[in-house]
Length: 215
Ligand code: GDP
Image (cartoon, rainbow, N blue to C red):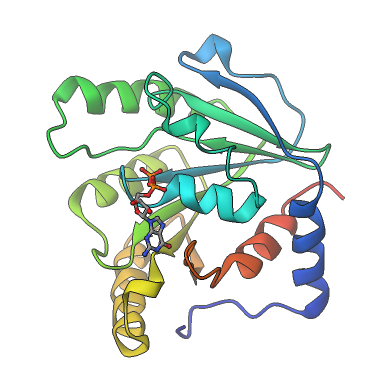
């Protein structure tokens, strides 16, 4: 996709495939810090604006259509939803941010629970920050990168909905988003482009996450 896209070996891709082909279970939805499950597993959190394609991506990764639907169920959209990949990795689906008519209370609520979670989760290995490839980095994405910088959390930008763009457009967007992410010190330099529609980038993202899982 671009010079920043990682290159994976056959073995790394196979480890990713096996990890996500194994058991994957919904653990719980946490609406406050005390409900967050204790865990000794390495953890990956997914963040992104509402409608960025987060549920579709979690479904595409796990190959289970029903899993992330949970996260989009009314009443659960403000919760952090935890999924467990056997005894290897925990996934945390963070609430979407940046509703079109977001009130201050919405963003404060996102901020409160999520910031407490980000600061107090020693097992958190990385946040996958989803950016819609048609939109690039918008202001609230930039705000969230600031939050992640301040919480000293390692994060990696992943583009969604790449099927919506021509290859040349995608290269340009990837360069622009990479430049925006580089302004933030904590950003992981490599970026993956994904489409839940075509499956593009899904094996690569699985490989990336498998490298962070318990073996
Ligand atoms: P969420 O709010 O971030 O969980 O977003 P959803 O996964 O619910 O997706 C929002 C909308 O984008 C839905 O209409 C999806 O069908 C659409 N969508 C999600 N991923 C893709 C993708 O990779 N390609 C295309 N073309 N549409 C997508």
